Length: 320
Image (cartoon, rainbow, N blue to C red):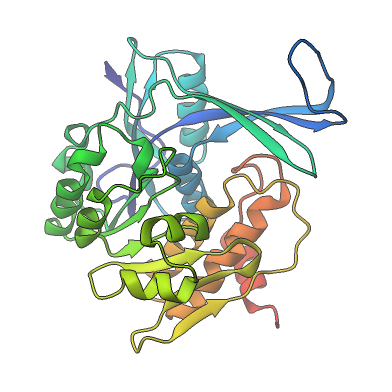
């Protein structure tokens, strides 16, 4: 196994460390008839972009101007090379990415149109990263640790609470995006992990699955009282969280015509974290998250059209 070379920014002072999965997305866009077994259809366009929740969030933060270091694992193959080179070109420090010749990099194929999409994924190296792959030196000097895809990180998940505790002991704040649980069991170890998390970023489906609540306010209140602040991503209805006095704060969505919603929630995470780390008020952090999530839908894939800080600021300041 070997580490990838570092990006343009050194690891010691990276503002945010992102730990998680990496894979490319192969996007086939614009079909007239969805493919059926034994038949072939033609599409209008094809692109290959960096995918996976963790990497999309890291790219969003880098696009906003935040120094980022990434820790993950890929195969020593062309797909892994593409992912590492794409992140390095965005200025992300990829010195913590492990390239393992015994693994294959995961790949997702997305067949999409303005009407709907379908995904086919090969997990590959996804889920092979463990907490021991995140050394203390990777956290030294950083301000924040973010992890995505809790339920897909099979090796990382058992040690994730301890990893967050190590980060907090080193002076970092922490955040977690659970992602969807394919088993829909919403395991209880998530609740224990949240004891070491400052910001928790579920979407509405995940929030209901985790809490069993029928409404967003009820779900937010069921998760209240611990360390983690839950920030619920509500798609076309924006985002919501509880204020310190128990009121529900909600930021509405922005009216944009989406091309592809892939990774919009991960770009939301990047926008919220960018504003939160800058000490902006909570309601403004929600608006930054919604703005970055909305702007990311302008192109195919999760990283093609992520927002710059200037673009997000203009949208945040736009009168309602």
